[in-house]
Length: 81
Image (cartoon, rainbow, N blue to C red):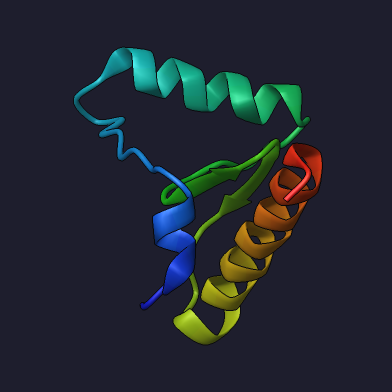
């Protein structure tokens, strides 16, 4: 998937929950805070929203891109750009 300019506006991190117990705990906490009963991988945290799973570039990819674009617009407005 090509996120284009969005990748350049945002940093990202990959956590291996199979190997990293702190990452597993964080994922569980994020789900609990959002009252999500079902959590899995991959999980994407964009601002305060969680997206769980990835169906395809056309579905989930489009949703991720839209959220990144909205986040960029919000950040731009907040900084006065």
